Length: 360
Image: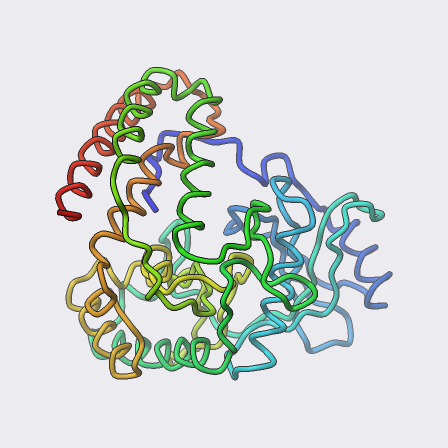
C-alpha cells in the first residue's frame, strides 16, 4: 500500500472520537467489576481509539480498543473471532479477549474490546520515534525474523485452510470482509469485486474528477486483457498487516505480542506479501533472509509463487486507481492533491501496458 504524503490530512475513522476515563471507569465497573487505577490514551491508533488500563488489586494490565466510525459491527466481530481461532490452533503470543461489544446500541454508543496487554515494547511506532528495529544489528534482526517465521508457519499449517476468501465471522465460518463484500470462491472473483469498488469511488468522489476520464479509459483497456484464473493460489490464514508496528518484544528481543487482528482471515497467500512484513522487505538483505527462512518452512514466497510479478502489478493497478490517501481529504484543494492525481493516473496507464506485455 502506498504511503501518504505527510502534508495531506484526512478525516480518519477516529476523528473526533474520544473515550474519557470517566466512561472507561463505567465500562470496567459494569463488565469486569474492576476499579481503574491508571488510564493512558495511545497515539498509535489509526482506525481505533486505544488506551492502556490498570486496575486496583489486579496484576493483569489491559488495553481498551474503541472501533472507529467507518465500520459497523463487522470489524469488531472479525477481530474477536480471528483471535479466538488463533488462540485455539496456535501458540502465538496474542492478547486475550476479556469482554467486547460489537453493537453500538450499548450505553456508550460505540463498539469496544477489552483485551489483555502484551508484554514488551513495539518494534516500530507510527512516528518512528525510539524505534527498536533500526537500532538492531543484522544478527539481532535475523533472530527476530526466525521467530516471526515460526509463528507464520503455525498460522499456515495449524489453522485449517478454507476454500473461500474472506474474514472469519462470529460462527467461525468464512464470510464477507470488513467492507461487507464477499466471501469469494476464487482470486478472480476477489479481484473483480475490488476493481468494482475502485471504479465506484473513482466515479462518485469529486476529488478524482480531473483524472476520471483518463483512468476510466485505462480501465476499459485493461478489461480487454485475458487474465489467468490464478486457481493455483492457495488460501491461508493471514494476519494481513503483519508489520513490525504490530509486534512487541522483550528486552532480550523475544516476540511477546502480535497485535491488531482486525484485517485477518482466509486470503490468497500473495496478499501477505502486499500487506505484511514491512519494513523488513524494504531492506534487500533482510528481505532475502526472510524469504530464505520462509521457503525452508515450505511457505511460498514471491520467488516461488507462480506469476507473482503479474499479481503484484494487478495489486498496484488497483491501488493506483483511487489511492486511499486521496479519499476523505480534509483539504481537497491542497496543491499536492493534483500532483498525486496525475502521478497515479500515469501509473495506471503504465501498469496496463506492463500487464499487457507480461500476458503475451
